[in-house]
Length: 202
Image (cartoon, rainbow, N blue to C red; front, side, top):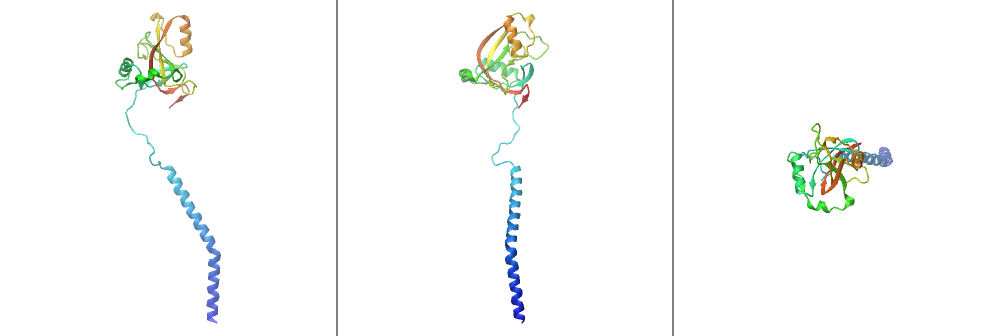
């Protein structure tokens, strides 16, 4: 009788174990997946191997200019002309502007104008690199024709006493039409990426 009872109990244990095993296995898989998901989320928050992280380094001084009637900031990095490179380097407190002669051969489609004034500075505001007001830019970032490569257009007031600060290409074109200034292509290309512009910044 005892043997029969023991056998019956053994069979019941086997049946219960057989019934619960799949559930335990499924729960174990679920727990394991949850752990993987958690680890995956934690891993996704960490920088991937080889990812570049910001580091301290040399700072290129920003320069004030005008675009669409507003102040903008930009930098000079390279130019096709050694004389202009020296002028810009001195202007930026010794931060070197590199000479890259091949920039002068850049296709016209890659260039946008920058208007650099050679005279007319009144002494009551920032000055451009050649003794006039700060440079004027057309085609800011977001415009289809924007390019950091700038073809220098020299602007000279015919009568310095009539000079005033212009802040947009439309203002400049009006003054050109009036005959108050003359313009001339310098044949020099400068890399001048924007840092800030109307409605945006890096």
